[in-house]
Length: 122
Image (cartoon, rainbow, N blue to C red):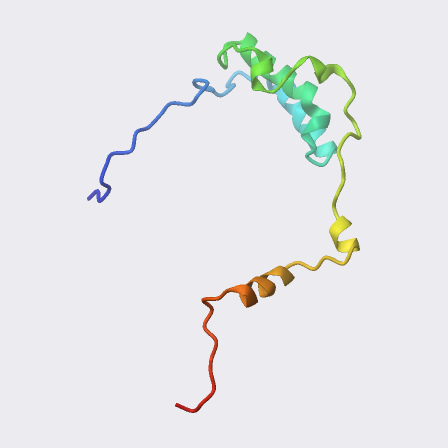
């Protein structure tokens, strides 16, 4: 039984199919990228050149549609060294006295539609 008013249209992936690499032709590139991600704590910016090599390998072997790498996030500036370019903001608000959740109680007190119990013994 289908209760929906209209049938959902199924669309194919935007860039076509992405077949599995059964022959392992691009496995060395994939393994190098995954090792880099593990080494850098999943900071992808440090592993971007390896990601680019992996996608290029897939395109060269017909495992994905050939496309300009600039359209999928890789440009001419990918050759420069980006290590250490991440801006770390973790802990800055806490060091300034921020406590999570305090703003919620403040919002509750500003709600004009909030029910408040009234005394009177009725």
